[in-house]
Image 1 (cartoon, rainbow, N blue to C red):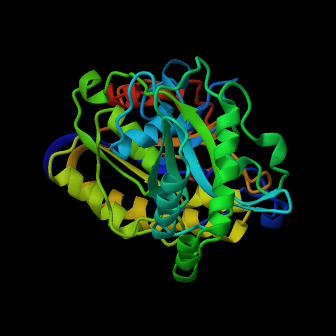
Image 2 (cartoon, rainbow, N blue to C red):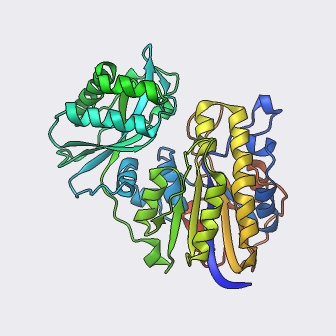
Length: 408
């Protein structure tokens, strides 16, 4: 037995959902086979937590800030700066960063928010063309992973960030009413229009399109903000650790929190991601001395945005069997490990976008908890079972401190 106290956070992005007629009135979490998560729920503590404060737009940025122990009301400045920081982009106090998605637009509608899961190599070609052709003062482009890229506006001249809309919120809808608005929006729209023209007429992009997958039509700018300032959890709690994810957002939040990205080959953020590699990386991080490890899997969220029930069920079951189960087996040799398993937010199949509804969470600690609270024991990790326990955490940013204190 290894004498070590550590914390593992397992995030199935967007797993929570609403009951579906196609599943006999069950949610995907209820319909899926999830013995590993059910074990955490039955042997630990299960409840509901609000990851997105009332009045704040639901998103993976705000919700995951909560899971990392930061109340979005106090610390959220925008999604793009978090991703930019992970990409090694230096942001000054007067700079603003924006997400630069490549999307597929068709007949005035948002056909696909990911440009049909464009390959990163294809995105890089487009970014290089945009850098070459668009000469707006202070504007810089940075390639990321798949459709997720970054635009930085140096010395952003306005006090307020323009209002923008996440493209995954308007799949199948008219996109015109959701174009950027407010101070600086004219420049953002100009760049978006220019990008569509460049993508359409560039020979380099046309040649790349023959080699790589994806159907890019335009850049879509959103999620703008400035560099956040927070106290890292490494200082708050004396922990050291890593983030394991396919998306820059999670690594960016981790960097702000003082954690180090652990890259996993074959991690894609979709159904074909390297689940086993993520589980092995988590156990390796613990073995090398980390005292907190965050493992994030994006595929349930992507499936929710697609409105694809079959894909979401598969994503949840793969998360359970190929990530949660091997990690739970691997930590058995440790003396004192606490595991938190939860979605960051719901991504309901019916709406294809994020919801701010509370989500189920389950906490397992081998040594038990220093609490006298009686919580109804259940056998399943589902939204309904979590509600039945009567345990409700109105501010999910308090979960991590409670875990560290050995209390819930």
